[in-house]
Length: 355
Image (cartoon, rainbow, N blue to C red):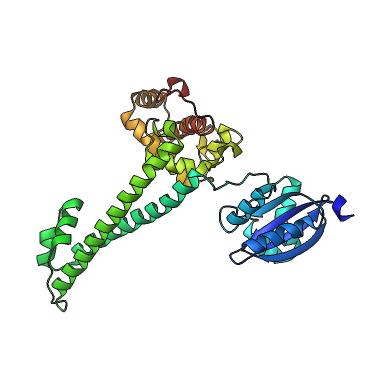
């Protein structure tokens, strides 16, 4: 009898264990079980799901975090994996932890509320993402370091502050890194010089780390999407972020509109009374939205076609914010074509028909 029953699995992922639930084809809760997050636990989880009937699909929460390895295991064993958004926190607090709550992912798959295909995370884009995580943290730390240096200079004793005030960043770092503050650390001025030298050397080390990451990322991004990097205003950093947003399997995106929505570049109505306008949705990947925004700003400054477009829309009475919204939407459409259907023939950097 169990073999004839069609079932759907759902997994609530955690750090050390995954809570799995299984329901039948009409939504009745059958069982709940917890499994450790290791290869043996994944095998037991899949066998447990199959023991309840004919497994149609498995809904997994957090396929990009705690459930990433489980999703890879299920796909490798010919399982259909559905990416499920986590339920509303207010609903979880109100309903507590119970078997029906544990089966939320399975119910979402069965009802059709969840139908997203998770990223495979097994190709060159995943390698780009890993390297870029390190680069971003190094950039953040370097920014924090130079801010600390300038704050030190503001509050430093006069003989230290006057020598360093007004220097550009490169010269400031060079002088501080080569300075010799002395050994009298009990003296406030000497202690400040010592702190500044250490911060300057930290800044230099982080700069070298960023340069190494750039040297590693550039050939990877160029290999993954050479035509994307060739687009006007798209550099290695922005191309890397757009590739990461799309994933190693960009065919999971149903249309260029879905990609624009994923990048927070899809227009939504914002009309009120006699005002008729649109704005960009505030959801989606904010880092991808930042990449599109950067590309739009570069084109507005250096690309002749984009400058002509901005001048024309400004004459028509459109605000700069709305012009940026239109540009980001057009750029998302252009990027999508290079992500989904790469061609062997180079295309023009910017088509007038796009605007």
